[in-house]
Amino acid sequence: MVNWRKERGSFSFWVLILVLFAVQEIQTAHHKHEVKFTAVGTPQTLFDLLIVAFVDDVQWGSYNKASHQLAVKAAWISEAMGTTFIEEMQRLLINHEQDFQRAIRHLTRNDTKTERNHTLQFRFECELGDNILLGSLVKYGLDGEDLIQIDRLEGQWTVLNPRAHGFKFTVESPFWTEERKHYTKKYCVGAMQKIFQKSSMRKNLPPEVYVSHQDFPDGTISLSCTATGFYPPSILLHWKKGIDGAIWGKENSSGTLPNSDDTFYLRISLEIQPGDTGTGYACVVDHSQLETPAVYPVPEKSSKWNLWVVALSILLAAILMISCFVIFAKWKKRMAEILEWFV
Image (cartoon, rainbow, N blue to C red; front, side):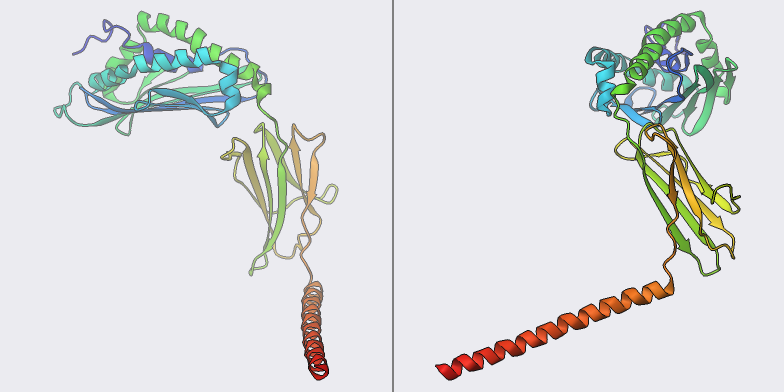
């Protein structure tokens, strides 16, 4: 059995993970920090390591064993953190790559098949709102099975798999506690402060809103309101009818989702009952980049008479074009005959 407490730097990597859950007054808005680690290897060799980090559901960084590079996706976050700080974190991850392999070896020490590949996974979440910790989670898993987790609000490690009992003793040791304090101050609180104190560097954008109206054969009507391309992600969408009209129907929401350009997307739909014409409805959008909540009426369905008018107009235009072409062709032919006669 490996003596984990005596191996130099064995737990420094794990400490780096736990720092994501320290509570610090950083910003009054709601924020979420999430990091996911996936390591693949045997007790003797680490084959692959992938790390993906998110701030407010926007991927800000990634790292993989092949490149040994900590890539920061959002330019404003890279500028906010600074080159020196990013390079320091990158060196730290490179130095602790073997800690993943040691963790796999420790957690699989009782396995008979020592050459078998294993996948070690870590999931970390931390949410702050108005300087209050709303929730946090650290969870470890091996080969698709949960091992051990800690809820920051409760502050107690919970063993989810018998093979993690020894690991629980390690993370609760004095050595672990002292190391965690150091990494909490420098890499969790420090990184979060750098990001949120410079969050004004991120270009804020108002939403683009699209409202539609769709009829179904069974008589129901579906109204859809889509807001996209906005930042920051906090936004409110709701339906209204008239001035104070009550809304009756089945409402669905996509939830706020990230776009590929680091902006966000939200779609809400309302299925109203048969007999309701769908007139008078509007989508109300409230976002920090709008001076006041914006109201977007649902476009009215075109009547059959309007459709006939459009169709007739197109037909008359086509007839006029054909007539002009025929007249021009006859005139051209006549002019040719006249020129031929003079010649």
